[in-house]
Amino acid sequence: MLNDVRRQLKRLQRWESGTVKMLGIVELFMTGMLLTAAVYSLAVGEDATVFAWPGLILLIPSLFQCLFFHTGRTMAPALGILFIAETWLIGFCVLSIPFWLYGFTPVDAFFETVSGFTTTGASIVADIEALPSGIILWRAMIQWAGGITVVLIFTFLLPALGVGSSGFVSNEFVGSESDTYASRITSRAFRFFETYALLTGVEIVLLTALGTGLFNAVCISFSTIPTGGQLPLNDSMASFSVYIQAVTLVFMVLGATNFYLMFRALFHKDRKSLVHSQELRNMLVWFALCTVIITGLLLYQGGYGLADLTSPAARSYLWQSAYCVVSAGSTTGFVIVDYKSWPLLALMFLIVLELAGGMSGSTSGGIKMHRLIVLRSYIAGGFRRMIHPNAVTTVRLNGQALSDDAVNSAISTIMLFILTSVCAVAVLTFLEPGLDLISYVGLAVSSITNTGISVGTYSSMDSMAVLGSSTKLFMCLLMWLGRMELVMAMMMFTKNFWTDVRLSLGSQHNLSARRPLSRPPQRRQQPWSYLHWPPMRKEQKVVLFGTAAHRQDPEDRRVAGLNLIDRAHCHLGLPVIALVRKAVAYGLQRPEVLVAELQGL
Image (cartoon, rainbow, N blue to C red; front, side, top):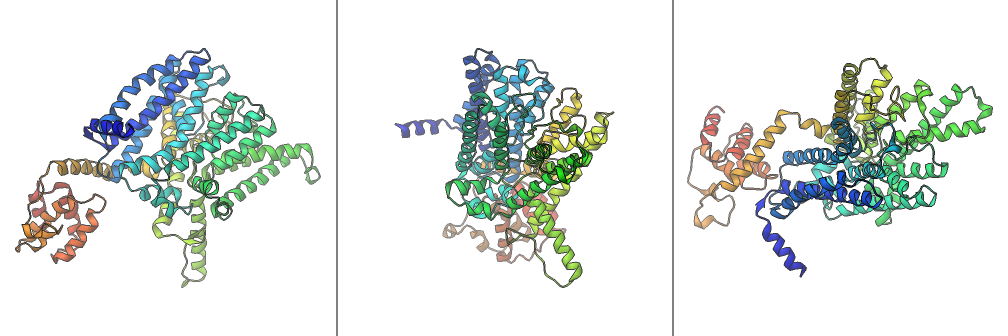
């Protein structure tokens, strides 16, 4: 019975487009979110139409895309990156509709959605508790969905489209000892989802047992694990007991921990993977060091001495510092105290914590701890070479030497974060004149690191509603850039990226429309049989090479093509690489271009 249904559904798939089909799956997931919120609102007697109508309307195109499109050949990397951006854009637009229907302005609805879906946590709502419970639950669901979006895209959707998983996840999981795992990432994708859901469920149970109530427990848990920040109460976590705060602190640390390490600890019983992780040890030591420093600054500001270290005030400062440090370092954004009156140096430490972020492979934002470890090792190696010029140094992480590409990627990402933050501060000074410097820095860093809590004028418990529309839209851009880890987002603003997109789309069209090459009957079993044809001019060989290479897998055509030149003994030299790329794009449709350029070699 089930097999018959599968065959019938497969017959409906008339068109080939992996991008359209996967976007349909994303839209179907969002439809489920909308209808779930509609059912809850209907059950509690609130207006469910703000969720029901968008959900029912979105159901039609999502089912059409899922049923009538199928995934075909592999997707070029440029198209894969473009697909990620399309997923975020569709999510921002669709998930903001309930806010707009409820009464938010379009800009405010978009800001609230982008902040939640990127797990930033900043809000334009001044009185959260005055909102209907359905809207509050919707804010929590958007954050939870945003937390697993990265997992779904990088471990399931892109491999399902045929994009090489190792190329897309190596930047994120470089510090997690997951090279072996990356090769099997498609078959284990749902293990991440199980880990994510398991942590959320455990926190819901613990918070409910401690007296938060089921609704608050769900909303808090849906914001803690994805390291979001939008909570159901105006004072964030300040009104809850210290035991409830302690539970959220533990799960904030877990949300900033590498999900692959937790996957091994939970499902493979490999507890040593967490203990031996250099990145985890450095993150915990960094949190502890900042806690001690900020506590000392608060005690000094309050006029306390060494004799008062065991006083209730010292314990209170220690707990407030520890909670705010973990919240900022994990980029969650929970607070238990309004730290506007804290010393300036303590606020600067919070900004640095937000920039540093959590571990690789987690839902936290920021630079990530493994990149800072790489930078520290790189600088230490530079000092060692200055003292011993003939010494051979390597950058190591978890005892393993890193390649130059990995080191360059880490350092370039760090520089991009710093440079983008400086540029963001300059733009904010133009959009919002009249603020002090610490407020500009706080808004820029909290947005680009997906933390949400700022310092200065717009501090821990303040609303962003009074900001101008242009400022809100610019902060939305910063949130998206930070969630895309800057490098991948910056690629979309380059000419080469869109050239690759155009060539990839054109090559797919040409491949489907081109007839296969005719070959001698005695050589059909050899894929490169035209090498044995009668002698021909060099430009003819290049043209045929481009067409034959184009019929290969898109990921392998260039490497195989260069090997072919060596076997053919064409002696064309390295400049032929440019002709190879054009041959791949044009095939036999534009041979005069290849001939003209070959004559100039």
